[in-house]
Length: 111
Length: 117
Image (tube, rainbow over all chains, first blue to last red):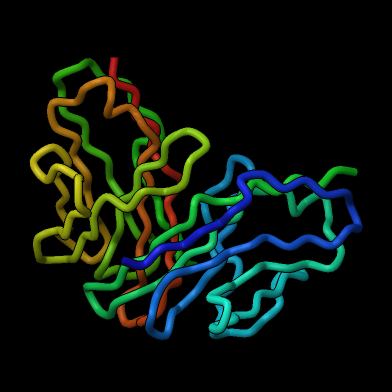
């Protein structure tokens, strides 16, 4: 069965430091991977998806099929980046589509 | 655009009663909606996939008779927790997938906190 692993429950960095939130997945096919973010007292929202290869709020994530990873990175963390980050794996098509979430990593950026 | 609204945001009920939670896509049509449960400081657990006009698909371990899902229109799905018990107390979140989009971009509701006394 497909699985998404986020090994760090908590991650704390200082402002301006680089940050990397790890995500590994288990799936033998071609995955569709996402990072979702939940800021304090706000709803979950999409941060970025691997097919877009975009940088959102300074964050990037590269899909590494060899290592089955999709780590989220930012070179210089900001205090407003403090939030809960979820890695998600999308599988299936049409009405069978399903998004499986990792357990999440709570990022705290200290001043 | 792409706003999903849940109602109520908080509900307290007595044990044994039923509670209905609504999930609406306000400015788009959603053939598929998803219902999640989130325990404190834990991840979202997918409960079921709700498809407009057909029966919901439940995840393993989720009682379909306990958590009734109805998706009668392209903008509304409802979750009814029947004969609620204190262990059903949780944060329930819905998300919607825009009709016609074949990606995993989901739009989430703000969640509904259920407390069963």
